[in-house]
Amino acid sequence: MESEKTQDKWAQWLLHKRHGGDNEMQKTQLTFLGQVRDKVLQNAKIVEGNTVLDVGTGDGLIAFGALDRVGKQDRVIFSDISQDLLNHCRSLAEDLGLIDRCQFLKASADNLAGCNDATVDVVTTRSVLIYMEAKQSAFKEFHRVLKPGGRLSIFEPINRFGYDPANSFPGFNVAPIIGIVEKISTVYSRLQPATDPMLDFDERDLFNIAEKAGFGEIHLELHADMAPIPAGKLETMLRMSGNPRIPSLEEAMKQALTDEEIEMFTNHLRPQVETGQGTRKSAIAYLWALKR
Image (cartoon, rainbow, N blue to C red; front, side, top):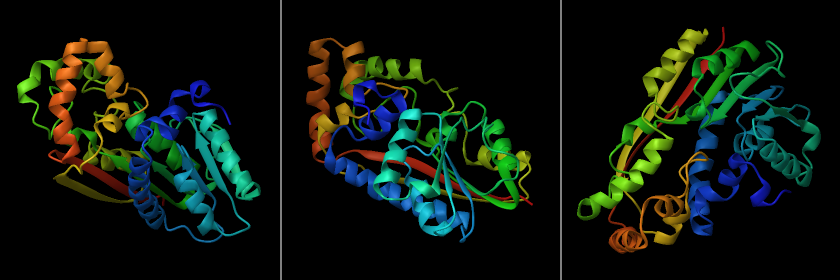
């Protein structure tokens, strides 16, 4: 297995940076992701004998779950643009004695050229379309590779729901240091403006894109919440990165702030983070569809 420093940005983020090196945060994230996995697989209605294509497989969360459902003689295709993540999944499959039931495909969601027309029963994805400019092309590819009667089941965060371009820390009281916060926000908005693929869609767009791709039966479930942010460690928050394409908060501060501003920022935010004074707004969508 490659070291973190030699892995591509996708593997670095998924395996290390998304939880900031905090074991407790990693456990919390995995608990939530386990719920996502179960819901995606439930909506996929996988039965024994199905061939499943997991697009943007990442660390194999959905794909390994699908192996439990397809039957011992059937296969799951792990697909991702990251060879490092495919290697990671292959290593896990070998350790678990499942390698004979796994296939690995290096491909982008909008160009599944290694998968022939009408050859899979189920396509699953988790947090893939948020990185895709060509979302319509991705849905057309999902439709193309599915057999008639095949099912698509996806999960996507709706990042537009809680987006505030002027404030990277919605839910925390940062009014006294708003000038400092704006400098940090500029780093992130420069890398991911409102036109970025992570922000350029909502749940209605997902539904419409699926319909336009040719799916004959479509269902969508939206969960939107506003809830307290649990108390945590500021150091974990500083080391975490929201996605593979942006720096951690610690890295952004070093780019945008003086040492004095960094001290002012951390001193202001620390008591709020460590006593759970923040509030988070978030939305997620599950979509499942049938190819007739």
